[in-house]
Length: 358
Image 1 (cartoon, rainbow, N blue to C red):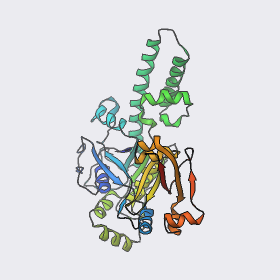
Image 2 (cartoon, rainbow, N blue to C red):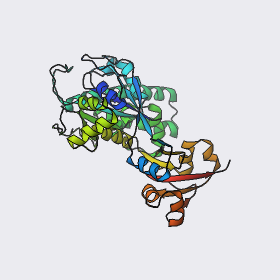
Image 3 (spheres, one colour):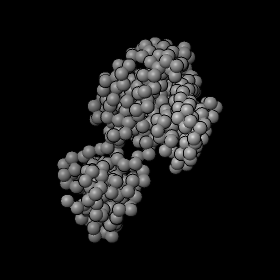
Image 4 (cartoon, helix red, strand yellow):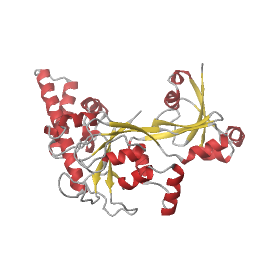
């Protein structure tokens, strides 16, 4: 399962947000730096209104949504790349996740101390981004020195590419830009992957606002194209403590169709470049996750690895047509059913039945 790390300075609301996401008290959310030391891990269901509609048509006994993993990582401080705060321990936890949700503080609360004694979302983000850049710069410089020494003057094409890529990244980082700002050829990507750079990970900025339904803080302008969303972690945590029925009624009274958390989960899902395909029948209706661009056999392999080798064909239709024509029996006579082979690229919202050799 792909994972997303929740990062930020101390006391910006990371653990409160994590508890709301996971509907738990798993993370200790206290008013002092580093109350989270070891990462908290939670599995979060991805909201998908299509599931209930498909399950109703198929009269499914079970409905199973897809999920992603969130990791609440200890707060980072200025100088972390040189060991300040939890330093390298913090950075190693970020290396293990696939993407980053960076929480920046826009709420005002005199009872919650900000480590910089001010509220400035842009500066919060810049501090963390610079620490990640400095950590990557150390990684690249170390690798560059090792590569040059190992070559001992004999530089073949492979070594040449590696040195050129490392020097290209080094220049980028020295200009205080993340490595993801660069474009790489297929040969260069091989080198980059081995580095496990922090600034190559996709980032979603979460602006943690005051307790208001209308966020007042502005969109962050960080000099790069970024995905951003607003939440009020405190309010979301309170809503998460209600029963699903109470929460639904409360949100309805407030005129809210989608919670900040749902927006965050869906934005995180998009950040990982994932799509959802669906299976539906009487036993269960289920959502499955694949990377965008996955072929039909690769999607089948998510259900069971043996299905990749045994893949024959797939019955495919859109989820809207599945509902419109009353499930598989109606689809088969509607002309909307498609038989797809091994080269088919699965689309978000496809309802699929795989035919496999057993």
